Length: 156
Image (cartoon, rainbow, N blue to C red; front, side, top):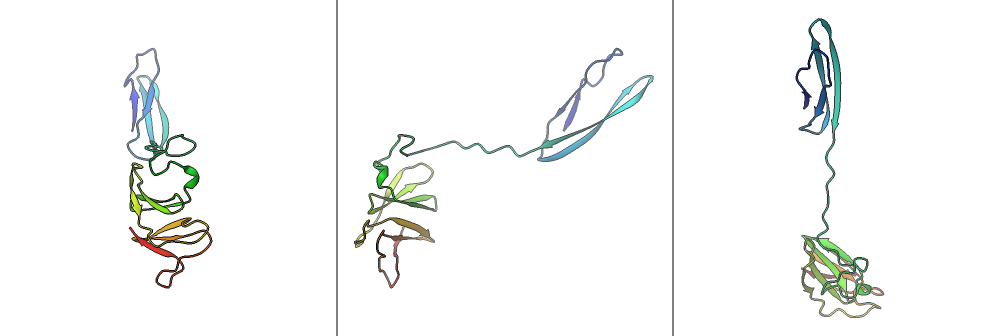
């Protein structure tokens, strides 16, 4: 992990460069012995610490008011209420009455979940949550009754 160059110097002296090229994360050390004819050996201890390189993220898509970019499923950002993630998809409450399914990696619109029969409330839909293979959703003012539950369950 440590290399010394040059390997030898002229009798008049010079400069030695120690290069640290780690092959693993952690602290590494070495002892370098400098030898000269007619002089005492010199010992140099060197230490280096290799850290994990930070992960760089590349933004693939960003539909937002701030970016100024919109998509066919997000044309009016004031009507996006909430979202949740599950199995590579975003489930986004849009237009206050739809749950749009979005490919989380590409931002591509995959379709809307059926909300047939949902009525009432100040806003028809305000929140959703992925629970296993189901989507649990509710409105702003009242809860939906479905199979004696306080929340409406939609399957994706």
